[in-house]
Length: 106
Image 1 (cartoon, rainbow, N blue to C red):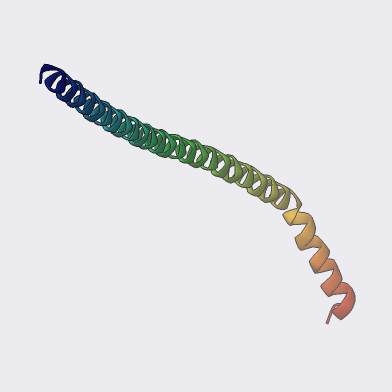
Image 2 (tube, rainbow, N blue to C red):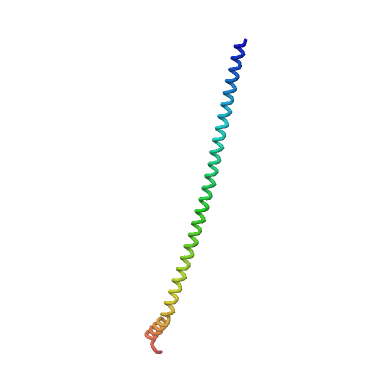
């Protein structure tokens, strides 16, 4: 009878050990899944931050390029105006000469 009780006790301990092993394995799997989920969220957050930073940098660069372009345009316009003003009298005289040559003194 004592041997039978010992066998039953060993079987119960084996069952308890297997159940404990299954529980620990399940917890380990759950912890692993939780860590993977957390890592994914962190990666997605870092990616979103990186994309936002890159977008801000590109926007800033675009603004700088637009300013430079506007300044360059303004400079070119001023140069053209200055050249036109310098040549305006010549142009007027050339037009008058052409009109006089074509239509004469009538």
